[in-house]
Length: 530
Image 1 (cartoon, rainbow, N blue to C red):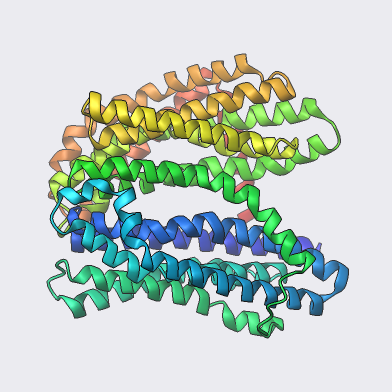
Image 2 (tube, rainbow, N blue to C red):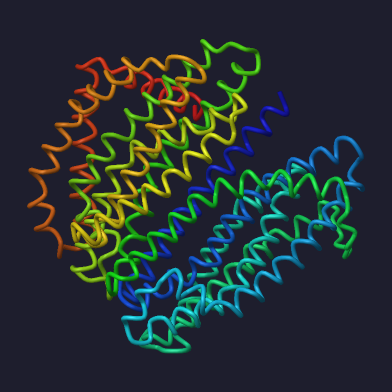
């Protein structure tokens, strides 16, 4: 029982830390939007940060940390802590050397790479040069965040969760405080020169993300000894385990690069509008899609391990129906309330009415793919549970081709601008889910497709009151656009609360299966708190 309480406490700490990090990340966007707006400068900054951030997503936080935790934990269990710490020194040395070389190469070749991923910037005077300058400043971020990911793995493997969980929050704190302070120091009016301060603040955030974990690492017993003997079975195993994760992440990053290439031709602003809209779209995805996937994976993994495929199919099918129940009304709400939501969160300082309008347009099109995204979060890990780990990767790469084709059609033939990029992303996610669903039915058998279709149809009907009340209240919310923020927030909260009540009432009347599942989740959560 003691171990169970400790795990529950750790899970609570991690959940709270993730929520804090997301709130601080949103605050970071809001502050930067107010100071710099959504124009040439912020496009350049976001594109410049995208380069080291791309490498972080590929090599550091997911692939490296997960692979290292697996091997490090096994080394502790089989050979003891001393052998595990020796492996940690070898990996820390290898990571430092490799990522230092990557940083050096990145700084030297920032010019060609930026010209490749943002060719349209050449049409705006000085935009390419500014992006290259900011990229060169921020490239060392990848070294710091890679070491931070390695340290996080060491601490989690020794049951120390608080400092690693808070590390990303310290990145946001450092990048906000440092970015504002350095930016003001370089240009009190927060013009183009202040963007260099923003880049320096990002480096400060990366340093804090690493530094906040070091005291706990020392207390855990780690003493860094530079060790270049990398011909070690543990090192090789970490690298081998990283390969599938890097390949899987590369599909997403290639899509990001493709969208950046197309957006660079659309003038000043689109990259910023799309970035802020996608962050907001990820909020319901993180709350609902990831949550359903997290509680589903252990159950279907156990069912697959003992050969109980009936339970595997039933659990997976029910999880996808629950994801539809939770995210379809969210998507409808985002489509109708995109503008008042963006206005409330971002519209202040230099973030203008025009920026609000275009960011809201992007959010509306992104929302079309919300159900597909959430079901992918549930369905994709199921392939790993039945030892078909390469299938989601293969489908992801097919979606790259589709995304490229749709971008070309929507941008150059239908002239949809940044909205076309958001729509192609949403449609690619929907097709991605459809392909995964078809492949899973062939591998595991029926996934209760008729029940899935029935749930989707009933959820569409139950969402009609959401569409109605949001549409009716749009003009009222627009009239509050220049009221004090408290009044605007209260008005938006009232509309959202009314829409939720109407949806739940309609779900109860229509007998939607997800309604009882949702009530059960709420009930269990309340019982835990009491």
